[in-house]
Length: 483
Image (tube, rainbow, N blue to C red):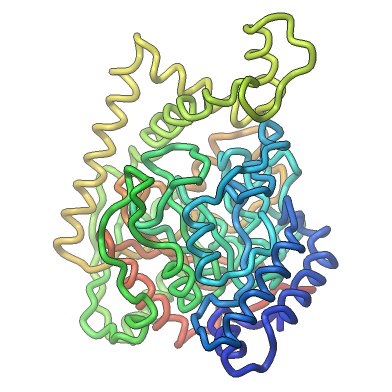
């Protein structure tokens, strides 16, 4: 059962080959057996899962149907889940039980999805490796000595190891797509505003976006269908109709215009990954796509702009964690200032503290214009580059990451080296565009992803291209040894 995709689970439940309760018990036992190697979960919700599974079976017995009805999933541990610890991978929120469900959690629960638990993540979603979590690093199931990518690495590792068929993640600068690439999954970052951020604990509010992680584009379409939609509780949610993503999967790619930016193939890209990307292009050409070289001239400025904007927003968002209302509080504070200083100093890890300090500096009176305002202007130039490119092509294709997964601890002494692993993904967040990573091959036994970007609200186009590619390749079907 653990090898079944979401789509196969939906068919199996509809055909009464197994019940949701049976499937849930199998997967919970598998998590208990295998997750100690991976550390992909922070919290397991066995009682809730079995309760939801029984309810889903009862709904099916009463004639209800639905692709997610009875399907087991997990949530990245920054989606508030009522009565369950929502830690954000941080000591600061280790004792926080959310008093309400995030919109994404509520929507998926209403669709009948079964929540198996909350997955491990970089602390407050800050990281590219899933090594900054208070609960310890997550291991990559393809090689337990390597990182799974971050910050949604717990969700990615759990799905890649077949502990469950799909999971939610969030993407602020590549945090769905990058771990998807490093663990051989399909991961989708929707258009900014397509999925509600209400109840999703914020890192950088103008960049964060929730999305699905699964093994196939077909499964991502199913999960996105349950997540997407307008939410009046989220002021950045877009009131745009949600199409049937599964219905567009089988469209022809004949005449599809694919742009390949020349800036992607620079000295920083592993030559073996470059070769796999070119192989993916050839595969899509066989399916009728037309490929041309394009340019994104301001891409070189994306990393510095992102690492001003994101920390600036983080420093503002994380100011609420002060030891007063909820979360971690230091022992025996001498006064209010001591309470603030020690609660935050003891509650936040080094990476979070680093980004808060960078952000506070960039927003300070003497440096706002020189850093934050300048970064926002660069952000606009990057968006303009994409708008110009999409006048010529339908999608943009390139590598998801410049390198395969690196060894645990290899970049801990050089944060900038880790930041550079997001060089291809952060532009989509800066521009608010949808992006998808899909499996494209292996380097030294480690997975590699190819990234697709599309115009606003064209998630269906990305899923269509990825699905057609996956019908003609088998990279996404490979399973890590031992899982």
